[in-house]
Amino acid sequence: MWTLAQVQAEYRRDRLLGIDTSRVAVSFSRRMTRQYGVCTFVKNRPQEIRLADFLRREDQVFWDTARHEYAHAAAAILTGKRHGHDEAWKAVCRKIGCPPERLAPSCEAAAENRRRIEAVRGVYVVTCLGCGAESRYLRRGTVVQALEEKRGGIRCPPGTMSRPSTWMQRPTKPRAADANAVRPLISTLAARLSAVLN
Image (cartoon, rainbow, N blue to C red):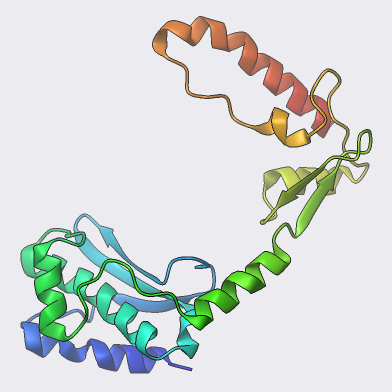
């Protein structure tokens, strides 16, 4: 498995470009499940390069992704502004020896990670005590937390469809002319949600 020290040593390609990327933090992320890497910015300045932890078992895809994200940071430092996957970014890629491709090819580590995620998808299952409908949540968010605190379970509000998720969805964004028509809908949704949580 590759380490942060090895990635930082790879990023010493600054001498090829005449820049200093030492202020750009580098980290591995276990939360990245689909994305291979990302370079984050604040006001057109690169702040951090995060690489997916599951890629550390790969060789070629890992290093291509690490160089890809480095090219984003280097292009921004060189020009003073962010570049997506434009010609300035592609020129930096070619200079550092990275394929100037927007997407990396699929790899076995990504496929294995997807299988692992799908196996545990829906870790938190909320079941209606009335109709038996289930809602699945990946994270322990406010809804799951509120239901755990209640400990009595949940029932679908009277007059709703059998799936709890149908009454939890956000309404579509109203147009300005429909604002008066939406106010009763919002109060109805708020009342249903408070009935469930109480």
